[in-house]
Length: 200
Length: 287
Picture 1 (tube, each protein chain N blue to C red):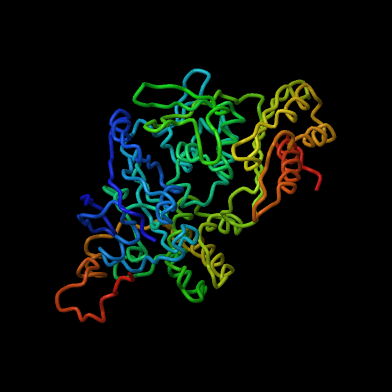
Picture 2 (tube, helix red, strand yellow):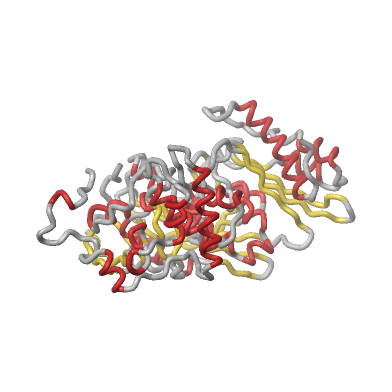
């Protein structure tokens, strides 16, 4: 086992992990961050996309099924669960996906949103072609791409109008507490059926 | 799928990394974008993974006289954003921009991609076209291997067990040179069915020098020597380029697979070579 320390959605977690543990499994099964899903298991589909800090501290999109948990040691991670602002106000990209109905079955949505946030952090005013190119690492098996592209375009415009970056603000401790009083972990007394169970 | 168990080492110097690779089934972990999928499919089962992420000296690009030196652990995203690369080796930036997708480019590294030596990978052909030297450290000291000798076979390089690729040295090609990487694939984030890395230097309206290398036209990158000699000293017009590109598949031994037959790959090599050179010369190709 290897000791790692990872800050996820504003909360620091210290854990012992097997070196072969994939980051996505660590997030879901150890930290209860089940908003991040496993899609293809072959690093094609991008459903497991999260933001992770690079060595320079910049948050960038990565496929968490293709990162070992040990590689995330000392890094900061934002998952779909950490995107909303204080009081659970939706992030501009989340709001645009909602308003544009940019999902059908919804399985690709967490990864699609995180990839869009990553794209807009580098290119706040992308053309439709740049959006499609920028999201090429994410597959929607319902083929609902049209509305996804519209949503990303809207989110970019909304973020520019608001004069804010589409990059997520680091969540405040208060916001994290309000959103997940137990930091995302099941607490004593939580009924079992309310706790998302990891898929083996 | 979950990888088979392995031990994990995270050295902080090249010497420590080389020492950690002493076990014959040890494997270097760079960005992991090729290796981790292979581990998960259990096509690779090393005893020890030696993670180079702690070696800060292996990241970044610097200028060294007439050369550009790129640390092996520099990510594709960093290569793409680097002003020195864009100025002195734009071909590398063009090809890197076609690698996989944004997420993979954030994690994958230039060194990892070259050391993995996938025939469909885009960067080995660029290394060959640009006369890169691959700088290697091992228990016996350091050595440099020209790209032409580095790629030995399918997924096989001149790296010996226990050696680490530390940096990639490229002669600067700025003023006078223009370049293009042309790639054909059928799907988003797809591997190259064939790719062409082309660099030309113009002088007095003609072509003074040309470098052309091909991706996925064999088990290792192929230098299109017949195209280069047909272009050298020739005029930079579309007819000359088309005639030269007709030699692109000469000497290559492409394989056939589900994506393309060998004959189709040869056809693509000719067509993409013409497009790449015309684009490098600033001329649109005739459709």
